[in-house]
Image 1 (cartoon, one colour):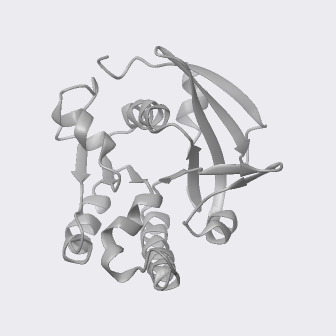
Image 2 (image 1 turned 90 degrees about the vertical axis):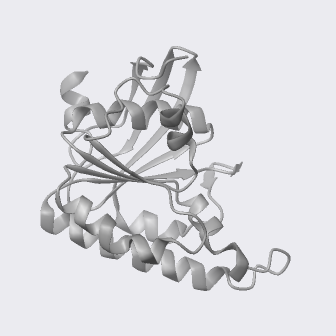
Length: 207
């Protein structure tokens, strides 16, 4: 199991983690950071930040994880600092893409969704910049994305750029809880690993 997790995230494309349950996603991100020397963590949905502030993440060490939790209107001013941190990291986590839109909520009309395409374009450009940087630095980039509902047999995600993720993701994963102390990870697509389900212990959160 240890060897699989060490080789789980690849370099060259996005590693995408799909989830329904934010706590299940937290179980995975808090686990995977323990396999890397230093992580730059962009926390758009603030779940990881809330748990670290409550001292609930067992393996959280401030010198090992550079945590960014930008508020509305702050992302652009943090870009230089984020890039500098990535340059000294061995993993980048972007958590979660759905909450990226909250940073630009004043530019979106909720009823008509006017402005959503502009934000999607901003998100795609943002991801491409970070993906190119991570490729040049030879470090993996993990993005998380909440799945809203299921239609027939196809996973539907809103409002993130589904086509972009499909085109740029070399690894696609899905995480869900089995119990308070266990969660499972589906390896959906991977360049070297066959599709399979891993059963993992939730031993990085103090609950």
